Image 1 (cartoon, rainbow, N blue to C red):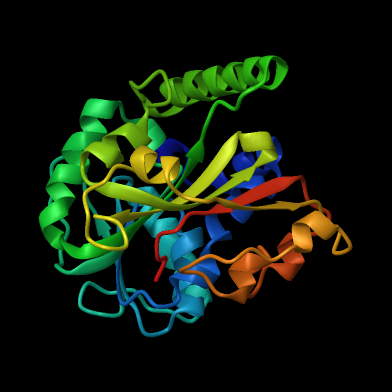
Image 2: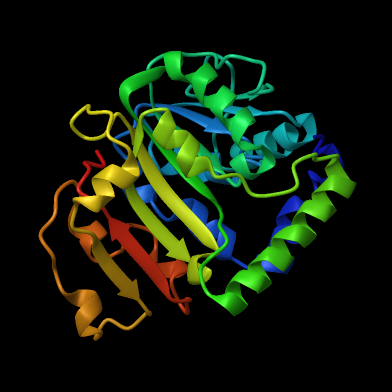
Length: 288
C-alpha cells in the first residue's frame, strides 16, 4: 500500500465524504489520554491526531510511525505550523516504518493509537502487528482504536457495506491496498489479552472509537466479552440536548471522571454542534 499519491489530497477527500465525522472520532477520547507519557501512533497519515495530541499533552513523548513518506512530509509541515519541531530524539518523532516488518523505536509505551488504520489489514496481519508490538508495551498499556464497523439494522447495514466496498475499491485503485473487507479486530485483541474498557459509537455505529487495556484493569486475562457478560454498562445517548433526562442521569461506575459520565471532554464544545446521535459506553475497567 502506497499513500504517496493521495497524501496532499487526503484531508479534503475525507471531508468531502464524511465531513467532520472522522475528525470527531479521532479526538473523542482526547480527555482520557492526558495521563499518557509514552505514546506510539500508528498510521496517522497527515499528522492531524499527532498535532492535536501534542498540543493537549505537552509532557508525553510521541513516536508516530507511517509508511508513506509524503504523508510524513505533510505531517511535519502541520506540526511545524503548530510550533512543534519533530525529531527522532525529541518529544515528537515522525518515522517512516512498516509496522508489519519494523519494530517501534522505543519501549514502555503506555498508549498505542491507531485511527482508521487496522482496516488496512486482515485478522492474521493484525495479530502479527499486535505480537510484534507487545514486547514494547507496558503491562497495562492502553490501545485506542478508531475504525469503521458495520452496524446492526437491515437498511443501515446495507448502506454501510456499500460505502465500505466503495472505499476499498478507491484505495485499491489509488494506493494498491490489497485488503477487501473490515477485519474483526476485537477478536484479535481479546485473544491477545486486551480488554475493552470504553466504546463510543458515532453515525449510528458506523464509526466506533474504543479504548482497550492490556490484561484489563486488574491484570487478568479475561476477554472483553467475558467481562461484558458480568458488568453493568453505563450508556449515555447524546443528542445535543442538555435537557435530556436520560442522558443526564448519573450511574455509579469506576474508572472515569465527571467529564466522561456526561460524555464530554475538554475541547469538545466546538465539535459537538450540531451533532449526530452518539452512544458512549463505559465498562467497569479503569481507563487511567
